[in-house]
Figure 1 (cartoon, helix red, strand yellow):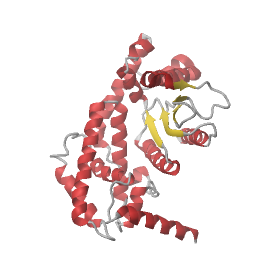
Figure 2 (cartoon, rainbow, N blue to C red):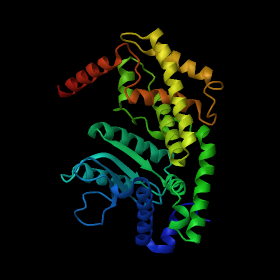
Figure 3 (tube, rainbow, N blue to C red):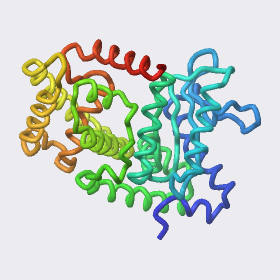
Figure 4 (cartoon, rainbow, N blue to C red):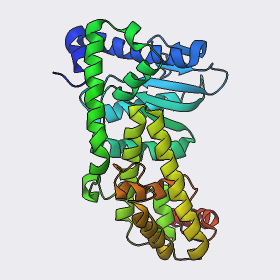
Length: 325
């Protein structure tokens, strides 16, 4: 049994499969947003839009549908970057969000690339970037009662099998996402804000923090892609609890130049609570729970020094000036 969307290609050819996949995305967005969701006919001047939500007089949500069923290799990465570049450079419209829709599930290494590219690109262009994978799309079609009417019996059965397989894999993967740094690349995330905050706080052992951040990012994406609102709500509550741990330790251990004790104390608090107050999603690994701290830091809600926002701005300014010399 095929366990992904390759069967669409086998049954309908490449062109037919791409058309059906875009139909999936379009029908979902019509159900969600009504008349403000528009499918854009393919043409040379479409400006990098497959589906838009909004109107071109205001910043839009831009959905890009890519029928990538064999994973995200260099060719697919280049297409993703080029599609975004076309959209962000358009003079015909502005975007508030860019969403990539794909039928595959990203591997850990593929998601590592996506996470790094997404983080850098969001900050560079001040825009939200999101990922809708195959299982998320199918679960949302079911949520909006489109599944039974949109597809024939054979297609429904295949999609049900795909969704069941995806979710069975995700159900046990949370605790298994414990990747060593050399699996995701030692240079990953060097330019991201959470890393700069660690450097500025004279925290030397940063590689483990990068690993934890990646595990948290990957875990959150898996939960989002399942489309289970209650599970996502539980994960968000977990994030709030971990923020509270940092907030308490910050009051006690904030320092002007050294954040090692603050980070260590917060990590210890998470370790102590791993099997008690943080056990609501017990499948999530301890590394991912620690990584949530660095997700907060990336969003500039957490830091490791007293007046960390001001000190980060000064650190980044000095770094740029040193680079110009």
